[in-house]
Amino acid sequence: MAKQNSFVKNLKNISKSINSLLEKNLNKLKFDNFKILARNNKIILSVVAVFIFFISYLLVPTIYKQDDISKKLKNELLSKFNLEFTFNQKLNYNFLPRPHFKSKDTLIIKNQKNIAEINQIKIYVSLDNLFSIKNFNINEVILEEANFELNSKNTNFFFEILDNNFLDADLKIKNSNLFFRNLDKDVLFINKIKNLKYYYDQNELKNVLYSENEIFNTPFSLVAINDEDEKKLYTKLNIDFAKLQIENIFNYNNDTKSGSASLLFNKKKSMINYKTNKNFFEFNYYDELDKQRFLYNGKFNFKPFYSTLDGNAEEINVSYLFGTNAIISELLRTGIFNNKNIDFKLNINANKIRNNRNFVNFFLKSKIQEGLIDIDNTKIEWNDKSIIKLTDTLIFVKDGKLFLDGKSKINIINVTNIYKFFLTPKNFRKKIKTIDLGFSYSFDEKVLMISDIMIDGKYNQKVNNKLDDIYFRGSGIQNKIYLKNMINNLLKSYAG
Image (tube, rainbow, N blue to C red; front, side):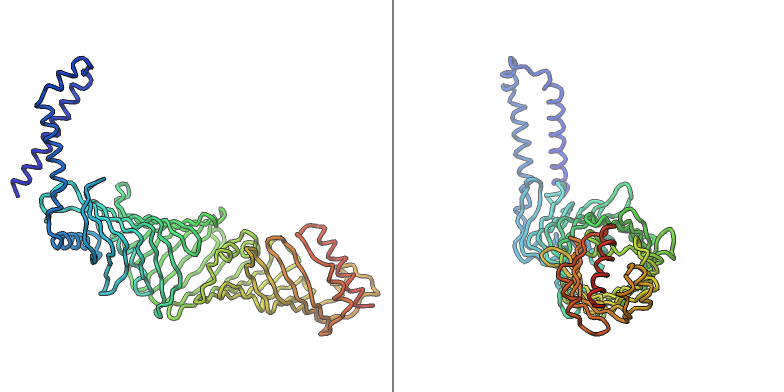
């Protein structure tokens, strides 16, 4: 062993001497005395000898037995990353662009189960100690085209890797997939890992995970930093297309974990406090400046998987939920809700609707299943005039566009005030208690179509004939005038 280390030391000394000699004389070198330098056999022989020795040194690992290399690398990977690898094919050695071992069809084992199948693994080793297989030092590992299998029992797999020592070795994962399954082994979602890296940050003096991903065709990036001393995990999630950024501090001291997250969405900041364990995730969400202005409470159950979300707000902007560029609209277009295993309920109470003072006491009751949003039994009051209730109503995507289709039942509270609002002539003012109608709305084109009106439970052919040429576009002042004229024309047909 001493001889091997001495040989390596001599190689380094020879290399330093040559560099020093070239440094001193290269600037003085002229074409006229190039022949003199060429006749200096000592320099040429030294360079050739060092080159041959260096190449020979790089090729030393090729003479080692495959079993010895496999055993050494497996132990080293287990020691550095706490990951148990199984090599099903031969480990091939290459010294370009730097010394590394490469293999196909590799597995990661955890709790005696395959947690990942890796198409190709590259294990880079330090130039030091190539003469000694026992002293191989891994400085980088790259996993390519790997498929990870996770479920509720091992959801922390990627974060647990942060507990290891990355001071002298990085771990990278490229062009891979993460399949998250329920306990029945059904796939809940697939996360595409484009580029993931574990490394040691010299400034933070902590391990860092940086990952670029895509889920349900939605790209996002994630940064995670683990503080082992305080038992805290810091994460930062960026979803650029939705202009959403989430910074989170997660405390994992106890069995039931807790944390707080700051959300920056379209330059508006809000907060989430939460707690979780292996069975559930509970949270409350509020506006950072005014907790009473915007408050949600929710719970996600993992066994079985379903979720509920209840919210209260003094005022709500419906366009944030279902507008053309709203986050739910964008997610619907990506197909994120098409999974048959998704069961999500959202209920919101709001006293006011932003930019529409005529509507109050809005109650949204929604359910997301198989790519559709069901908003049956959603209610809203039109001042003190009527209560509007939606039935058989769905929000969906068709040909890349967002639509709302359904039926509405309007219970008239004060028909006299309605006639006053629309300036209806007195000879058209009949008593009306209920109005039922069908409707279709395009969020992208902002066009509303109405059909099949029934007044007090009766279908009136004259009224419905008028609907053939009626539609609403946009939300400008002209539509308000158009609305009054249209309503009065319908009332005229009904009264006649």
